[in-house]
Image 1 (cartoon, rainbow, N blue to C red):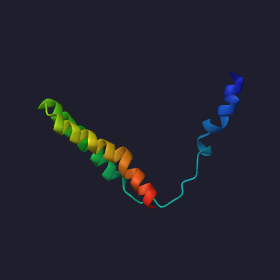
Image 2: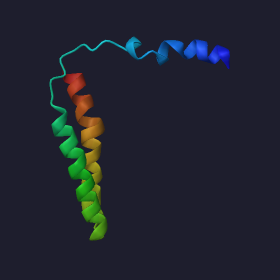
Image 3: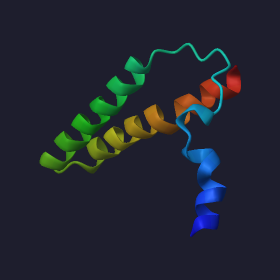
Image 4: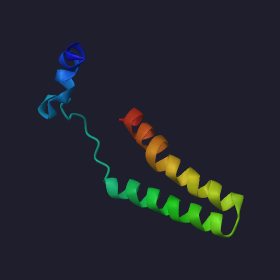
Length: 76
């Protein structure tokens, strides 16, 4: 147990994280709005029992959390 804590000690220091670098200048408000909108649309799709609307909501969530940030990271 002590050996595990010794190995993890570098990760437990909050000041020891990676430095911020790069020029990711996109406002997180866009991503949050897309996620919230996706959840709302997905919920409406479940209420009206429409698989298409649910799929659109899920797609919006995936865009906001995975695809758009990766695309922006690759393009810069």
